[in-house]
Amino acid sequence: MSRLATVTLLVAGVANKRAEPALLGLDGVTKRWGPRTVLDDVTLHIRPGELVWLEGDNGVGKTTLLRIVIGMIHPDTGSVSLDGLHPEHDRREYLRRVGFLSAGDRALYPRLNARRQLRFAASLALVPRPEQEAAVAHVIDAFGLEEFADRRADRLSTGQRQRLRLAMSLVHRPSIVVLDEPTNSLDRDGLAILGAYLLDVRQGGGAAVWAAPSGTHADLHFDRAFSLENGKLLRR
Image (cartoon, rainbow, N blue to C red):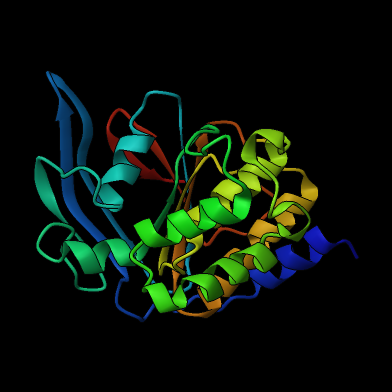
């Protein structure tokens, strides 16, 4: 059995603990950009152990929703909470518990090697200084970066850069993982590595949101799937 198939079966076997309280809660979230209502009364509760799929056409508001989840922007109305924390009132602790991979292939310094990029990311993610080297070593191993950890970013392939970006987003071991089009340039091995990491997050009581354009798919089992259409979050 291939590594990817094995990960798929393992992810499908994670217990779905519906009785547990939500780890992440969005209630009545509305966001407008000028006259346009991008998000219209969005409510979503994600429980520990869940992997949630979110799809929608380009420009529909997926990234806006994800940025509200991670506390980067605030809704016009409605509330957001993560394990009882408020994204503004409890900002430091809130940010320590979220990991965000943005869409695209940016956020790397071309002349820095992968290891130094990870150290910088750990510092930005508020990992205590005595714990930073261990955190960097963990994601280097988890994402298979050993062979090129000391290679400059501008000398990495696009797939290697995507693995590095994932490792940078998750170096602080967040409890909520938010991924915006994570399969960009990932081959089957890279997708299997990401699936294995998400399995570890979920078995540890965390959860993940995976956003992608309409019409795409990933070879993983998702506990729930939603689409964003005309500002509304619809169950698929």
